[in-house]
Length: 121
Figure 1 (cartoon, rainbow, N blue to C red):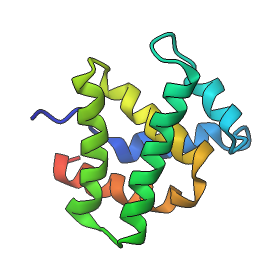
Figure 2 (tube, helix red, strand yellow):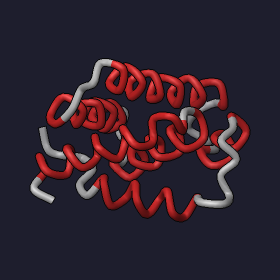
Figure 3 (spheres, rainbow, N blue to C red):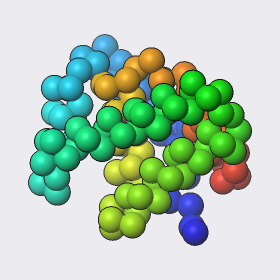
């Protein structure tokens, strides 16, 4: 399958810097940033929590390299199957981790680097 989100590591770095100082690390902050007419708040919160669960599981299982990159691939493929652009998946990942599970931030950065390495970025 074609890679959906290339340069995820760079996008995460930029997204994190743009949110620095303004992020509230809260459910409300997540819903405010991800508000879209394509899903209810409950649906978006469930998606954000699922993303957090995926990264938490990867972190606690000490998955690295291709195994950690596959978390991003799976999320990107899910949104692509729904007809959403790769940019949406990247924003959802960044926002979910920043607002709902910031404990996973360092793991996300490592997974994004592994993802970019596989994509040749």
